[in-house]
Length: 227
Image (cartoon, rainbow, N blue to C red; front, top):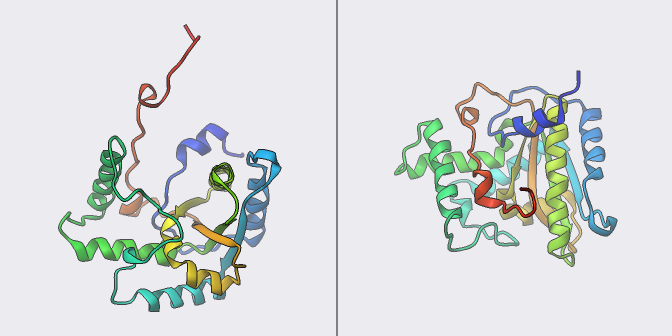
C-alpha cells in the first residue's frame, strides 16, 4: 500500500548512511520524472539532473577521494555561498544544535577536529548510497527559479519515501563543482547546486538515530483573519 503523503513528509530525513542494497533503475527514472510535477513559476522547470550509479558513480567517487585526500574540502569554494559568512539568530542556534545532535549521535566530541572532518568527508562517499543525483540550474536564472529548484528536490525526497527509499540533499557537493562538471560534461552555462543521495536508509546507524527539531508554528507564521 502506498505511503500516505503526510507520512512521507513526516518520515523524510537527511539520511547519512545507506544500506548496501541497489535501487531499481526503473524506480530512479520514475522518481526523477514524477518530481518534475513540482511547482514551477511560468512553467520554466529550472532543474537539470545528472543521475549516476554503478561504475560511473564509483569512478567519480575515486576522483573526488584523490582530490580531498590529506586535506580539508570545507575550504574549497562553492560556486555560490552555501551559508552566510556570519550567522545570526535564530539561525545560528539552530545550526549549532543540529551539529550537536549529529556529532553527539556519532560519539564525536566537539574538540575532535579529525573526527568531524572524517564525517564531513563521508558526504563525498554519498554515505554509501547506490544512486547519486547532481542537481544543476542555468546560471542566468534568478531567486524565483532557485526556489523552484528546491521544490523539485523536496518533491523527489517525498516521492522516494513512497518507494521506501531515503534521500540526503548535499550542498557540500557544490564545492566539487569543477570535478563533477567535467565528469558529467555539464555545459558551462549550468551551475551545480547540490547532490542528492538515494537508497535504502540504514535506520540502525547512529547518524540516522536522531530527528532534527523544527520551530514551533508561532515562531515562523503570523495569522490574520483566522479568529
